[in-house]
Length: 330
Image 1 (cartoon, rainbow, N blue to C red):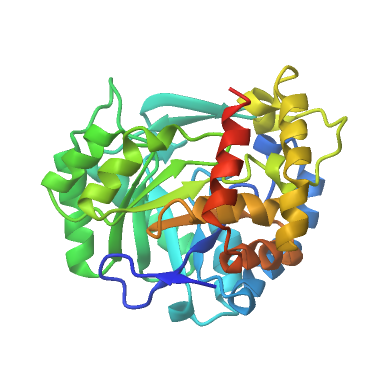
Image 2 (image 1 turned 30 degrees about the vertical axis):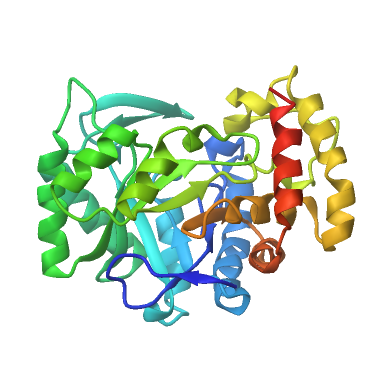
């Protein structure tokens, strides 16, 4: 595993981290209560496996199944050395107070609220669920919108206060524009930006990645395997449910093309003795030495397997060939 220094964090973080949006299932993934209950122990074991795989960054958010992801991580942390892991959680999506309407998950509505009072309520709840007294990286989940708009300078004022108190150690922002990154940087240190990035979705390369490079901000890629599509484990007759059903590459007209793309990668998988998931993750890491990524996993073997991608060294020619294949899809 390769590691990278983020901001003023004492220990470097693994370039491949564990993403926990799906770790407990829930309505976003089309799971019922019985299926969720069966997944909890497997999820805890997945988290406990991370140190053995060299993975020390674990990413979560209150909005992941309405706090359940944080609660499961908190249970796992009781069996771990807290200082051995870097915990990232987020703020800005709430379901128990007013805000600008966001997504509806199952029968519950999420709202955007980045006000000072809301952030302070959120971090208290996150600390309790996570069973910790500090957050390594605290990150805005989505940006504020009218009619509950909060200027970035006010959000950063709260984060700077929390950082000065030692409640958080580093500041991040997810789902931002290049202009918003520049605005965050006017009011303090922005250590890491989280954005969707995969070989099939390269939009961040247009302006987000360049502004991160210019300002020395780490880019953290989420959904690098396109919600499992690039894992190579989905059957060819797969019919998407839950959150996958609305995504571009899971639409009926795109799914066959994505599977054909995976077929084209098989010779490279044989060359590098790795699964297509490892190849896809290695391609992302090859784009910039200051990119880290989040790999979703719900079983111990998955995180161990994905972590090995850090050790795959793709040749520049193969990196370019993979890009050409992806670009040919449109």
